[in-house]
Length: 116
Image 1 (tube, one colour):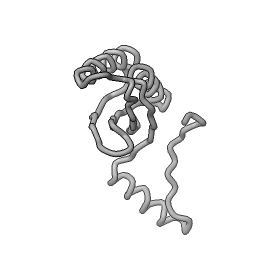
Image 2: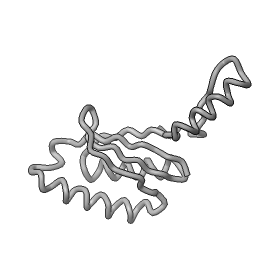
Image 3: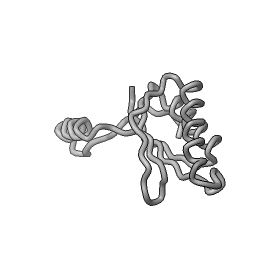
Image 4: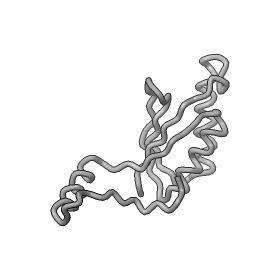
């Protein structure tokens, strides 16, 4: 399974009062579990800045993650961005191996085909 980061910005129209946020989260969990059983959730974080929510998930394909993002957009009227992610130690190991064999530096290949 590959790791992905989903960055979401919630629309002000997605809730009228703070209590609705808990309801919204519950609806998202139910729909995502039902429609995307192959996606494993590693964590959800509220953040300050350009984005409001960061989800870290694992999935077998980018298509599964895009389906999750579509549910997030539909249910919470959010905008989303998806990024493939690699643990730092794996990144450093692949970077070192690539640089040792080539003067052009590392290449990060994900095998994504025209999805995002």
